[in-house]
Image 1 (cartoon, helix red, strand yellow):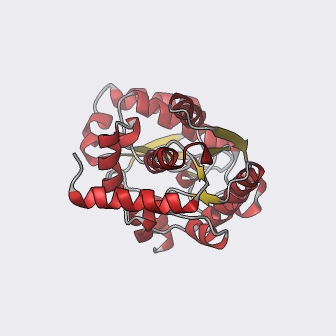
Image 2 (cartoon, helix red, strand yellow):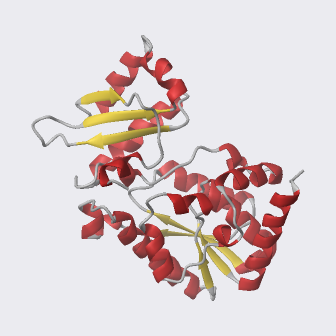
Length: 279
């Protein structure tokens, strides 16, 4: 059963969504957007659609999972394709790369929404996102995309708790960000790099490491070769470094294309690449 405070926030969210009348949710299949589209669909019914923008920076398994969720819950979804690598600022990995990507993504979602007669477009950021470096939120503001979870004052912990009560499978899903966040700022983003990162993280996930990031530094074209800097939860570092596991991980990541494989002793931290920006 929800606490009074959580119930109040949920009611506030439903009231806000009801007032929109119709809504296209930018849907990734993550904790936040799954919760948002589920609540929006419960309030608006067929006047709520999910729009999934598939691109090279999103693992295929995430797209497939998002599509399957909509099918299982009777939510009409549109699978659209968007190529952020066609945007120079994104490809060159400038510090506000996310702004250019989000602007392109939500322009596409707005186009889809208009085609279905949907008035508003929503994204799934929550209150915790305001405390991090999020240049993508500037694009959200400029394009008048609504942020219902923030309007209702919901934090990530709130969303997980309510999602659990609702029986949503994502309530305990690890947080996820597009794979472009794994490439060091200033180093070009390519399809090859993104596929290497996707394969490496999938392999580590299959080994049971839940909160995992494979940060890439350099490229094979450089004399030093590319480095995989693995981040896992601090409590998992010993298991990753244990005999047998260490060799298996190193061998597989080198097969994928990494020249050097390292473990970050500080453990996983969301937005770790942002530390180089001084933000």
